[in-house]
Image 1 (cartoon, helix red, strand yellow):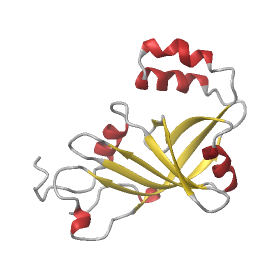
Image 2 (cartoon, one colour):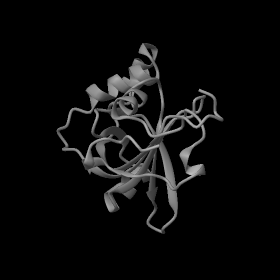
Image 3 (spheres, one colour):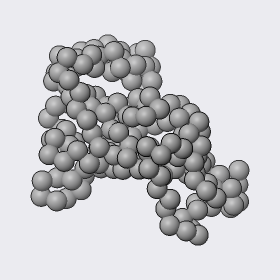
Length: 169
């Protein structure tokens, strides 16, 4: 689709899920430091259709900030044409200490590094990790099909519990 068309609109749930599960796109999670300054952290993730699973290092500002305030912003965007994106206002849920984070971490290694990255990843498994999910509360998407609709109207946020993330034209 041409970037100058009027076909830019929100994604359907199926389009969103395909976008989030294809390729090696990073999620960028925005949190707030204790002094009020925002910070953005790029992370690997898996998307199960309702939440993002992240396995982080225990000492990151991301984890420390989310322990203080579970609210966060999350963005997954495509840096190549077409410029698609999924924006989330969400809440983090820290998973139980006995959660098996190594299995999804191995899946993430295959997605982001390929089989050749497994030995490096497994060599880090002895370090403390913190698995958590980001549960979307509000979602805004764009299919990259033309002019971004925010040239004409404000961003359309959809309540995640309401079902479809599809936006009106």
